[in-house]
Length: 297
Image (cartoon, rainbow, N blue to C red; front, side, top):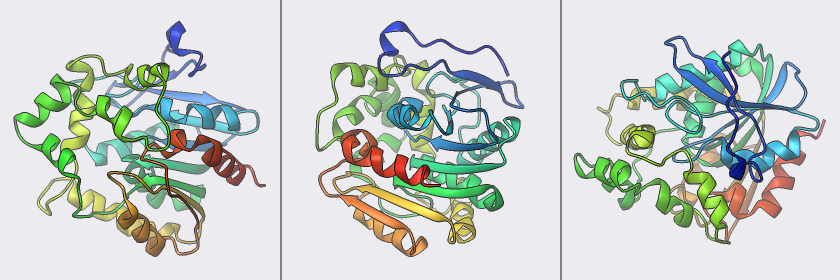
């Protein structure tokens, strides 16, 4: 463990936490929140792209009085280191999560996942089903699929893709509008989401996440994602809650129907007018659902 990173003052109204830093095997520092009672049972929340632990800020505040909340920033995102020469792949991100959970000595975890966090968090869970109690699935996928919005496909294109994503912030910035449907993020909320991604160098992992989407069977990450799908069979008997924004431009109802096949016993709450950032867009509905599910002992 290395020195904690204080949040800047303006951020603390929405994000009143002091992130910790864990050194991974290669010396890269992974930032993470560790809030609530220090037990060996925790809720582990796994974000996607282009968000960071900020996405879960209200859920952490709701749960931390009674539950330990561990929320990593993937390498290259949030307060984590942003090296330019690291393997920003799904396989590496699952390994990073395993490293953190092991280092904290967590024996039982509930997993909350969103966006690319689905493949990462459930990739971990499928490898360690004996350590997993409950699952919360928020507009995500953890299996190969051939559907991708044209605007994301453009961001994967050689040459122009990095110019859009890293040069113009043309992925994280539009997401603050496109990922919302019911309401508009406030200026401070937008500032919070974009805080880690202020420059070309800061956006290295945002770009890498997009390029790691395995749309072709020959893509290096396709086999990893297929293995994550296979691992879902080990999780079928777990208590699961699916909360779905029905107006998600990316993970639309096609993906929800696939989740119903993988998790037929899951409780499903589809919120018709909510967007991709469902935990923020429909907070007044989603927060009680998720926090109630995770504290129903």
